Length: 559
Image (cartoon, rainbow, N blue to C red; front, side):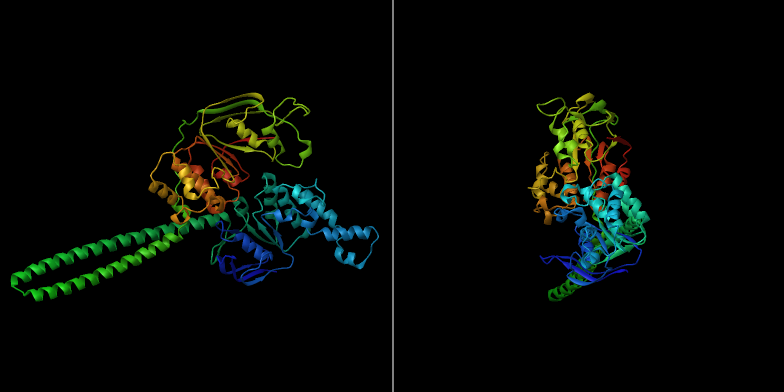
């Protein structure tokens, strides 16, 4: 059964229109990626299609067996895995029947699904959750594990239509690869909201959500990207043509006015010589002024029309095209040795009471040191194999490892916040900026303008700060906006803006899952920025597409 969206609109309680009059259809067996800027309503639209949210107006036609994978899981924390997968009633009915309760109600609930438990356990095992029973509470799972629970539900229920909202946000590399393999094999209808460009490239069709329309692109993400680039280039050419025409129109208007003024002056002198009476001269002058005013008005209207047309085209131009992030070169010469590590390791105390925490190793390593301490057991090495590496200025390095493998600890050792407890390490002086997925260098207590002033170490005049803010797509209407209300992409732009204001290009950028929670446009901005940056880059990221784009050519795998 296809999905049909007819004249769908959604209006927030504060009367803000999120989108309106959308018409959209998904045929049986179609696999589509849905993209759009942060805040355009992708998740809201998906919830409306799934029946989780009612539209303000319009009609939705959807199949009964539609399966929805949400982006956020907080509302499921009070449930068990079985309850989230909607198999708990069948499970209870099965156990009741096996215990001798052969009531009609139990048989109706079970609906001849006698192997429901076996299928569910097998599905969980397929998605790397075989260690968890169906009765396991959701609140004890990590974000990635919760995602895998919902992904397992696809194999349990085998629906005709699946909706996914940012399914790779919390998945590690192995989880992402398992999902990629599944998407390639899936033959039923699939609609995916995602910023994961590897995933989007596996989908044969892309749609882009805007306020009043959904634009269809008959190809994967790379095709979409090419088409958008062509459209933007065509827009730029049209803008240049309008600006050229505007310059010509203004020049013609100026030259015409100057020519008319000269003609009027010559005519007045000639009439005076001829002895034309003053009253006649005044009448002629008035007539000339009216003619000149009319001519000027014609040229002014033409210029205003061209200006309006140019501004409309500029409004259609992607903000990414207008944004330029050109950091100065690092103060360090390329190839200078920054860190040399030989057989290093770190010790932590095993926390036997918190074995469910995915951050156990990192948290323990930050708070404990090696050796015996009171009643604690002896410290254990964080890494099975000691680590050796050399990091030079200009290098691009990826740190890989599962949750809890010590990636954060290694970063702290590299930056000098921690010292290794085994092996030797030498470190040169260098500056760095740490950009995590929350962009925590932004103080959420500040407004946008106050945040910019906080980085004004050069004492730039006010107008220059405001020029830089505009350059980073923060117009005057947003300067008083609280940083707390900024999206991930906005925080990322503001972080780069602050660095430009301070004129303090770091020797090293450390990127910790920087593309999480960013829309496609924001990812393109940070990708372009880091590609152009000439200093050292260390990245922790499960986004292989991003890693390739920014030119990472070295890696450290932690185990």
